[in-house]
Length: 518
Image 1 (cartoon, one colour):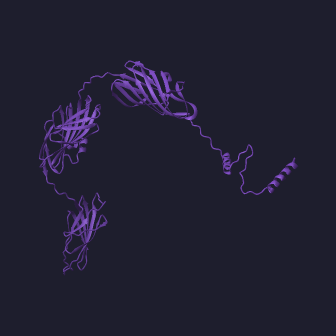
Image 2 (tube, one colour):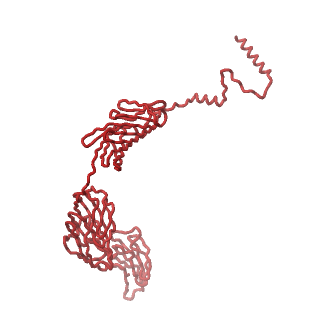
């Protein structure tokens, strides 16, 4: 066998040597049953065989239901509902998609996709649809259930939709139908055209029960409102106007008033009305009407500010205090404040009883910006008004002392030639004066100045030097030190050593002066 193979190999080599050389080579022909591949394709196949691709991950669930929107119509005999269910099948082939729970409580279920029926399987109270995937789907689910009636109320069962979110719109006949859904969160409720519509968000895991009761429209007779009020009024006397601020505290004993009417003084304009329950306000003469947004509240609080301009200043004023119209009983306090130096006189009249300003209610004191001058307490019944009259006598404003020196220490050094160097040190209590005016003796020169140990730069003026008492970001509460040094050239001492020296003039009072000469 080996000699035959060797001879055939020699013959093949001889034929290759004797064959003529050709530069145009033909592509190799694959033997029968073989395939010819380029080198690049061969390398790619080898690399793919060495690193096979990872298999595709299997979806964790066969399908998901994202949203379900229910339209439920309630009647006297049954409940009919239509649900639009959206979702997606994740796995290939036919899968079972759970849609509804609570099948024993539901009369019938019909599921369609694009108008064609869908196979349905019911197992252990769960209704599932058989769908092909992968891909999204939209189903129309119809269901119905019977109504269970009780005295004055009826109820029916709603299935639990196996979806991410479940929204339902329930329609019941009648304008006055009390519709309840448990469990569920009611978003809005409206009645129109003989129907009551309720929008509710359902729990996707629990079957819901919808119940309703019909109530006939009854003619509501407005119940008389009974109010007890407390009013705190602050009267502010300015130079040319009169301002009234009243804080009302209204307690509702009976009824549900939707509007509260106030009686305001004549000639006053309403500046502002504020309160948590006040919706709108409108003034007609001496009547101020407040519309409240929560009629069922048992307590209302609001603040009313009024104003009246008086030409030529205020000397005498008569006004009726603001009050709540129709209040069964009203208690109140009134106090006065004034801008400037004022002597205010008010006397007791009618239900007014004098009150010490230190006993005024804290809420009334909080309204004031100046010290209270007078105060009264009163109690009225019905719609009687509480008149007040007062006289105002205004005085000219007296100048206020801006700064004062508690004590001063003056030290003077004198040479034999008569030159004198003087240090003036003061303990100053300042409330608002910006500069210390210093009138130096004739021929004296101001050398330096300090405020609380910090050097400052004095300013020269024709009527004297100015030493600043305050600086930016420097406003001490208590007294602080102000010092300045000046020099004056004098004549030599006489034969008997006599000399005359003058201290500088200043524009603040000085209590105690200590003088030293060396």
